[in-house]
Amino acid sequence: MWFGIQERINIFLEATFVITTTSKRSAYHPSDLPLPIRTYIPTYLRPTYLQYILLSTTMSIRSIITCASLSLLLHHIITLVNGFTAISTITTRPTNIPTNYNNERIQYSTRTGMRTQTNRVRNPTTSTTTPHQIKQTTTTTTTTLFSTNVNEIIPLKQGSTVALVTPFTPDGQIDFPSLRKLLQFHVEFQTDGLCILGTTGEASLLSMDERKAILDVAVEEVKGKIPILVGTGAIDPNTVKEMTLQAIDCGCDASLVVTPPYIKPPQRGLIQHFLSMADLGLPVVIYNVPGRTAVDITPETIGLIAKEHENIVGVKEATGDITRVGQIRSTTSDLKKPLLLYSGDDSTEKDFVLTGGNGCISVTANVAPLAMHNLMKASLEGNDAEASRINDQLVNVHEKIFCESNPIPAKWALKRMGMIEHAYCRPPLMEMEESYSEVVEAALREAGLV
Image 1 (cartoon, rainbow, N blue to C red):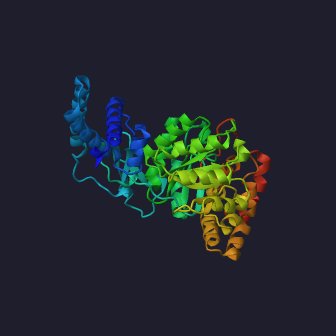
Image 2: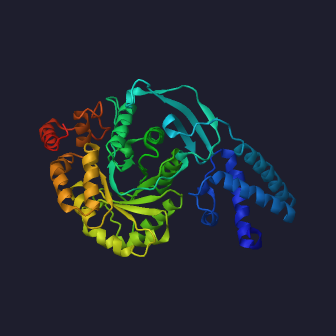
């Protein structure tokens, strides 16, 4: 079938060229391929590396037979040899590789088709796992595997997704023991989704290396237990692409892409931006927070984008306007799979879900994960009375956790609860002003959190 259409032959030959040239930099990724080849074989279908190497090898054989140019012939012979070598490497699998994710640490790269595996053992003296009870072995091996759950995309869910803070030490370094403790806390208390490296996570103040280290820990702790949504938004589309590809490499499940802040792009620019990011292969949640970005993506624009690309899977609406639920639903009513609509405003999330939303991406969930899970569950079931009862206990938390810029009060509250060691925020943010301590403490006590 492939050889019957000249256009597809040309596309596959172009893919062969891309694979051959990108192999020199050891950073092959499906997004390097031209759009037509990604249309025929979506990038989210894995194992992609093996698929494209097989295509490359097959088309090289075809090209050698039909080639009229000596230089091009030599090019395809080299590609053929490289292809057979790659296939031989990929299909040579080691035996006795553990596949239980709870007993191993895996760092997977979809660009290279390689993963690093470090066995993990739990303290045999206790059945409860806490951060200080996990010991890492020092043996690291590199293997080529494609059938691990690190490489599987876990679909996003309805309910309460926590907008997780990033804990730091007093000198501004990432506090990894506290990060692990937070992640385990949310698994234990039924948080439905993890939103990491967003605004609450001070992502704009983190380097790419720091982002990778955080994502590796998150994948190790919660992959396969709760979906991992990663904030990859920025002003520059090239930066968004780089962060999204990193999220793919680390084994995350979806990207949260904010409308580019400050520069106020027109709606047609937003369409192009989000479609470009969806082309990378990772499911995308559009993040609309005009109070921070100074640009509001309209429900009509969201409808156009969602109809154009199946990787647009949701919207985080942080306007506080619950009428947006009905407006977005009306512009996306003919989608085969409805968008997931998340509230990004804690004070209105109950009503947002009761009017047709699917959940929230919540700052309050940092300190009250179980209550937020139950609040969203009741709201999704249409149980207004139960949802109101739970929400009434959290009203002051919703308000006081924003008494200063997010995530300053959230970090103070987590430190007060003993969940993190320090409330440090990176400059230009600061730790919470002492005068707010009393009101945040009162809100926590009212909700039964301290």
